[in-house]
Length: 224
Ligand code: ADE
Image (cartoon, rainbow, N blue to C red; front, side, top):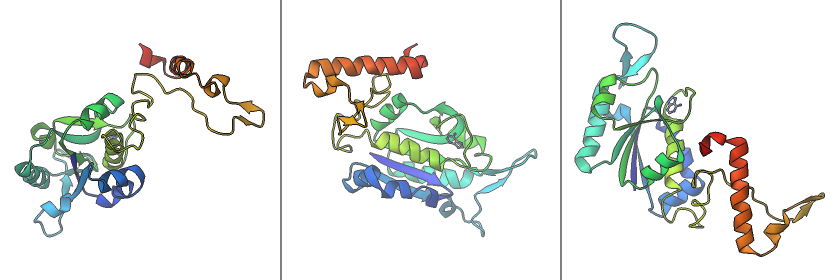
């Protein structure tokens, strides 16, 4: 899979890809992530990528021309499955969207900034708009990092234990059951006996019922 990220602040985005699972995925060639600084696509003297909005009002707006140059250039090299715009008014990211996007080959992610982008960018180039939650960030970069993490960890071979993404919270529409590790007893607090029983049928049954119980208690909306 290949992800192209278009941003005015690449430095905000690089560190998540330089550590842990994302770094390993890139090193193992399971994913390619390319950053494009929007300022490299302007020929103006001050390399400005934003301007005041027509009609007046506070806040700068990202201009269409550098974004057009960048996206059109990328599209001339390969086909893209989606051109995603990170924005608080997009559809809220969930596991289903992450799963779907993890099955694509090439995607572009455009990070918004300031008051956003010229509407014509959204009308002409964007195929999907994603928000990471109902709150406003200062730009789309952190949202893009969240989206990339959610996608990349699902790519085959990225997680050591192939099955571990499958047992994540949300993968089956439920929250994950509780997990325990050694010691079996800590200051009088014990691990449930069933997990020490070695009876895998019973353990699976227990996990399912706990997942259901936890979902019912914490996120009943998922069961609707
Ligand atoms: N840009 C600003 N706020 C955002 C959000 N909540 N999700 C995605 N991109 C954003």
